[in-house]
Length: 123
Image (cartoon, rainbow, N blue to C red; front, side, top):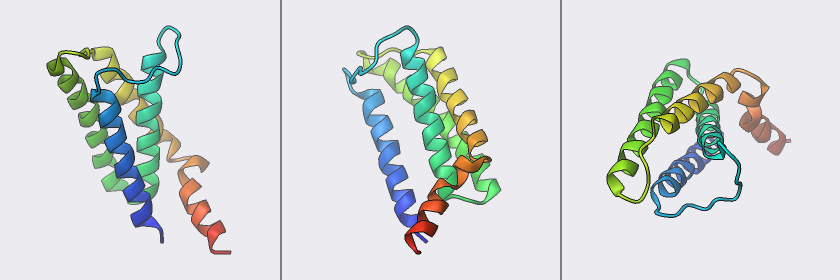
């Protein structure tokens, strides 16, 4: 019912990931070894989980998974070309791992959160 809203919010989220990934000095709220890899994985897991809920058909989910992996690789390439951020294979791995985690979570109760919100809103 609210699919268009969920998709629109998801695309805003994609734009935010691009912006934060390509800006010269992104905010650094947490500081410990490996936090950037955790941030990458969480961002991509969240995106994948969100879009899996908005796009419920299995085949588009596979394409979506590929698109997010390509997005993560593409952003890393753009970072390397920009001159103020770094190209890192480990970031690509963290992004792709996040996509897989999000896909896996979509097959659990977490994959029905948006549907539950819609159903509770109609009662």
